[in-house]
Length: 157
Length: 262
Image (cartoon, rainbow over all chains, first blue to last red; front, side, top):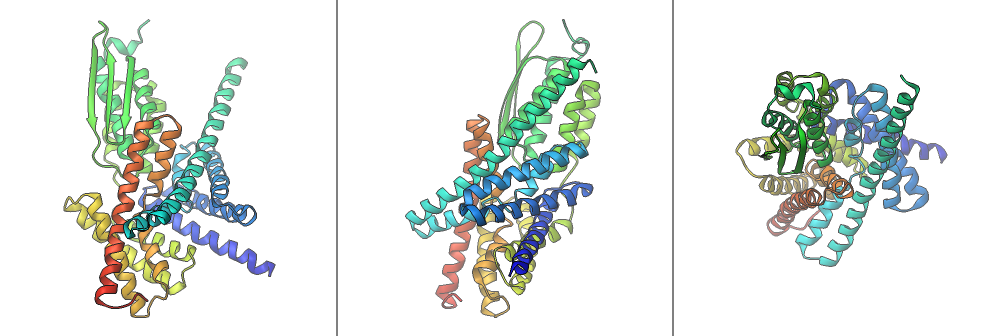
């Protein structure tokens, strides 16, 4: 039972990795960074599944997963001296509510206004959670980087 | 205290180069704050005074002042937007290093960056196949559904490129894409090659949905670029509307002329 449970996570992570790789190809990620960018998608998706399994809220799961993705992107970006957006833009692809946007407008086109509002609200809160997660990590990184610069200056390096 | 650059470079030239960098950023799909930071960084490093910029997803307005205090301004329209991360990456690095460049060398670098296009075929063809196929699996489709979705998605990429080369607006591309996704998956399920209509079609649709746009819209709103954020959100809703109109028409056609939906 536990074995199949872990297997599900592994296969899902693999599917997310390849799907992210596909979007990295469309977004022209440099060849050397393709794997790092795709791996971010898998990381984000596994965190999403883990949190959703325990918190039972898509929005909370999207928030935590996007924070994980953003931290991953900042760390890899720092190690490779590249902007973090190179990794985070691709890695949020499995999380972004593209399908939700589609279902919202689909319900609207079909004339069921109430369903459209409900899916639209859920979609926007997921998109908001992802954006908030990215923004929180970006702000924290800015604070850390500014402090680091200050520290080096005060030591006279 | 004037910077040594300012003695050589006209403020109007500095403004032109800075705004060009901002335009390249926005055309490559960067967030508004990133484009504005790029312009401010380059203008400051080249020694321009009091540079202000106002960027939207569809255009840039920027101004600076010359040594007599006369204001100089420029407006640049942005007509195409497609995410190109290598471009953004190179522009970020160039902005950081712009203090070591002269105006001429900076302009040369920008010309080189402008030529970075998206990957040529067949890379987008395989990329689309990967996205459609693996999203179909991720949403719980059967392996055969994923194969159908991947093939149909790769074909959609070619059709969309062809339509785009005929200068069709995105809205029309999305309607056509949605129509295609609904009809081809209904056909594949009818021929009992694929087994789930919804999962096969959502894999194809994932190629077109504006996921990154809606997240960037909210990032703009969070960082205080209110007008840009609303504009981007409108862009996302119009794209999603186009796709769902296409899918809606496709499903209606199928149920009216061929029979009940599988």
